[in-house]
Length: 462
Picture 1: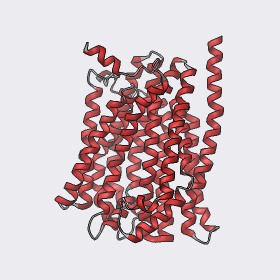
Picture 2 (picture 1 turned 120 degrees about the vertical axis):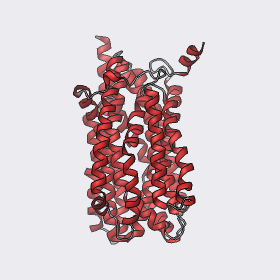
Picture 3 (picture 1 turned 180 degrees about the vertical axis):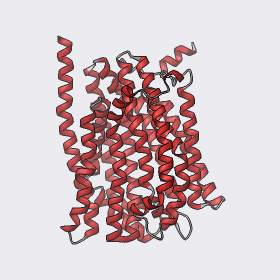
Picture 4 (picture 1 turned 60 degrees about the vertical axis):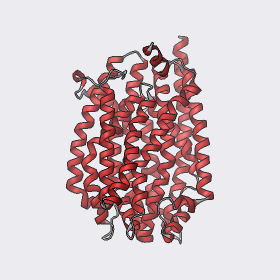
């Protein structure tokens, strides 16, 4: 009886109605992404409230963002590339291949985590200076990063392997991975920062402990009996034939996240030149707000990914079309809602992070410019992630490069030459790049998706 109830609770990726199935899978992944924001957002909110030094500490922590993003990006390179491959293999009935993919990706993640820990510990100071740290903000950045980097293996395990839980249709379990760590982080942050008086160091300690608990949860589940895909000793080795296709597919989310580091550096250097520490501090808040939009959209796409990948492997074009349609509809409702809030009440949003009047005014002004076409994230994120779910590595990689490397970074450097208000020009680069990237992504997806569906239908008739 217990086993029958368990089967009823599990998602049937090939037969359950697509609309309710997407909601069922997406709600936990959206919750997981929203809760995951708490790791950095809560840190920033608490740090911004440190008496007397909150604004400088917040700016210092913002400078560490490129390193934090790089660690997450390497987790995505392996995890977000491997999970769709496992889903496609499961849809095609190749269960052992799916488990071998899991074992290969786990071994690669742990090896990479060790290398990254050593590199960032050795070179963190010159990197932080390169990323825009000033003499005033560098000490705060160093205090945070010294500790955070020691938890790299926990971050990469929790982020990289959680996708393999979602790939099984067990989105609620994947949500618990993030929920456990984030709730713990919310509780520990004020204790270490204010009660123990550890300031920025306390925020880093709380985050590392929280990520460690999340990582243990993931490993425990994937090695347990409730997991459809099991992390087994015989498969815990790097198989190049499985790793290379996973990395090729993971290159798109990797580029999207890793270029965020390069993007942050470009923004910070330009903003430091035209607006000083105040402008860099505003950018830290803008980045946080952008995450508040992007993460739920990513969660929605990740909830739909197993449906799209599984039915692609199973040759079900009807269910694939429904998955894309429902995903885009929900994404648009959310993105337009948040865009409206930011445009109507930017001061309210800015005050979540800091009460310094000068910083709040700067941030509110920048928010309206930066998010001028923020609703286009619905199209960009949805179709970008659909390409990943379909195993379209080359197209997804190009789109990942296009928005930031081809468009945004050059625009940040070029536009100030054509505007009298240089600071405005730097922030204005974002909406210009967003619009162009979303248009390109939408057109390419409509063309390629129709080709895929047409080919599948032709094979069925043959």
